[in-house]
Length: 142
Ligand SMILES: [Cu+2]
Image 1 (spheres, rainbow, N blue to C red):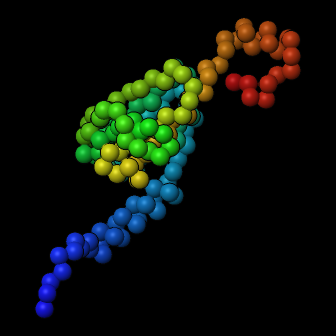
Image 2 (spheres, rainbow, N blue to C red):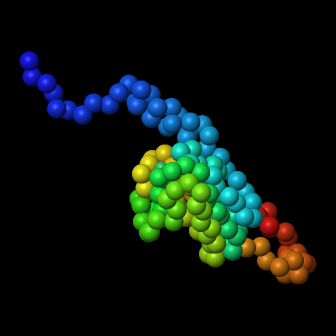
Image 3 (cartoon, rainbow, N blue to C red):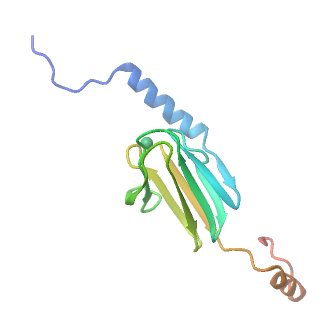
């Protein structure tokens, strides 16, 4: 009888991967705040961050060997250098221009992701008053 050389993955490993995938979908979180901290572990939280320009996002690594890197786009293709790689390390990024930015774990690109949505900073209060005097308030005002 011939033995197969095909790699085998245990049932437990399959179940762990399936549970992590389900948990990642169910636990997807969105945070709207000025300066946000992302817990960077196997289930990063929050998964989507909404901030204004010039606000910050900090990733705190609380689990070993999950290299955080910026991604090219919403395909979460890894790009850029490693920002953090281990527990106890952190990185803070300030986003000066509006746009959507993607971050991903190099080792688990389908499970560990952060999307940062940056909108234009609110105008100074004096400018808002001048704008209100001249036109109707915008439904998307800050
Ligand atoms: Cu990872």
